Each structure stands twice: as C-alpha cells, then as structure tokens.
Amino acid sequence: MANKYCFVEKLLSSLIESDDYKKSVDFMGKCLEVVYDDMPSVGQQAFSTYQEYLNGTVSSEELTNERVKCWNYLDEKDIAYDAKNKENNLLRAIMGVLHASRPSDELSECLEWFIEFLIRAGVDLELIDNVAEKFIKKNSADGKCL
Image (cartoon, rainbow, N blue to C red; front, side, top):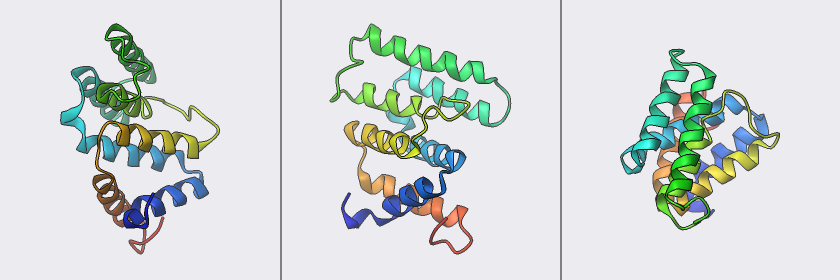
C-alpha cells in the first residue's frame, strides 16, 4: 500500500502487533458498513446477523449458518473461484466477520485477505483509509494510534 493510505497501514500494523482480534473484527465491520448497499442480499442478511450477534440477540450458530448461506450462494452462481467477481469478493469479506472466535492463528492473514477482498470488489482504498482514520480516532486515547 502506498504512503497515501497511512491510516489503514497504521491501523493494520497496530492491530497485528497487538494481536487484537476483537478490534480487528470491529474494524472489518466498520468497513462492511460502507459497502453494505453493494452486497448481494445474502451478504446484507449475513451482515445483519453479524450485527445481531454483536448485540447478543443471535447465537454463534447463526454466524455459521450465514457463512454456509454465503458459500451456497457462491456455489449456486458458480462464482466461488472467480477472483474478479465483485459479489464473490464482497461475500468473502463478509465471511471474515462471521466467526464467533478467531478462525486463524495469523491475524495478519485475516486482515490482509479482508482488505484484498474489498480491493478486488472495487472498493476504493481511500474509502477504507477514511474508515481506518475514524476507527483510530474513536478507539485510541490520543487519536493517533491504538
């Protein structure tokens, strides 16, 4: 990533260094909020379930069910392995938050793939950087780093 996108670089570096899965998922959720309208309906439903999970109104099983629905959608449309398909990439990004616990030992891998899926879906990196800037300001004492 270019230096132009300093907030997303700073945030990802901080999240990876602190190994903070919860804050990482919170950031991913904030990014997904800004692309909600671009998601297919199955992705919008999955995101709504994710938000309900955060509010404690649905169980972790519902997150798993939504992941399965996303995979089924990708398989039915035969786009699961189309790296250039916008729906595929947006659904893969949403699936990154549909876990009740950390899906991988490598937080850096989760975050890097999440950002990669958004970029492949055509999301402007500047938009992600703006989300990162707001996230840093909201979640840090000095507004500069976590």
